[in-house]
Image (tube, rainbow over all chains, first blue to last red; front, side, top):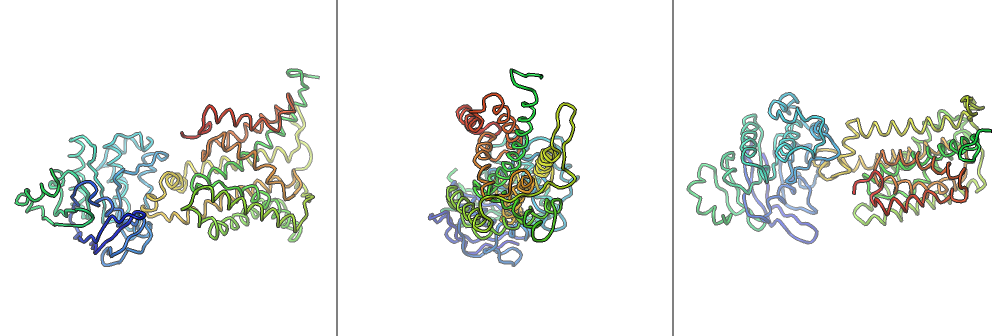
Length: 230
Length: 294
């Protein structure tokens, strides 16, 4: 569904990604693992066109998006949930939820979203940033489920959240996978990643250095520990 | 004669009315400035010139095409709004990656050019614009006589402020605009054509200024300096209200107009400076402005 080939990205003068290659097959949950600074978040932002300059190839269902503006990339069917969650303080929960443009038919309707995230319904009128961290994360995921985007980019959705909330997010990711969404997930926490993912790409210094299918994770623990330095 | 703090009541009413009228223009103009600053991060020094342009377009519509006040109230903002769109697309758009100062310089230059062209073409003395027939004559409020047109200006300005506020706070478009003011990049990553939103916002700000210009045409003579007379006070209003705050600019605009009126009654010597005195005090006590977020 997503094919990233020889992707380079720059922030100003600094060259961050040095030829990233990986593929996300339709219907899978795929993670990018790696230490801080390996280029995981930059890869996500590059897919959305949010870095200063990028080169290489990013194809979505065969369509080249490397030269497109971010709004047009979103419209090909990619939903983005940024690391900092990006909940808008001047918008209430409903407004935050309704903000992303509907790009294709087939997104979840509000009733389904509220059934998945009951907290959001209770707090529909609250200011977005008044929610707890976990609720904000739910809102950040929920709002890209409405749009009809079939590929969701989730950048560290579990960061800084309590274990019970992390479990809830895990359930949510399995639920949206079951509904046919494809997910590209950036994670620091590979113990969490292995509970939801089909395959893992390992990033180091702006490259993808390895791919490990989730089924082979146990056999590759030693290698993974070396990569992640845990 | 009834006296309030040693001043005749009718004088007080008269000056309060004038203050309210000025306040209406302050509010309308600072509202447009606030919307533009919020999304574009540009201090639009051309705002006074766009206000003046609105008055000139209304005058020209009447003079050359025999189109009267009421259609002009719609047409002039549309025409000046389109002009704003062109200005944004051809010039202002090139500056977003640079320091704010460049936007200020560019729009200041545009203001000088527009005013210069108007002066060159129509002279500096100003041309009269008749009050529309329906609004001639006084309105008897019981305690005072109020020229009907002045009452209309206050009502129309307040109505337009309320409408703008409703659009920004209560509609889908408004929530997109607020979100883009916070984080334009992310809003674009949600599929919103932000460059187009920015262009249209500048056009809407220009249209608001032109609407104020048409309202002003029958009160002041239509002259090239009518915008710059206002704009310095309007910038003070924006600073006092808080840069980018919608409600702040509306409330502060009307409030300071009234304060100016009161000062004319009780201490006329200070009436030209009172706004700036308030600005200094507010900046010392609340640098982000009364309604601004620090």
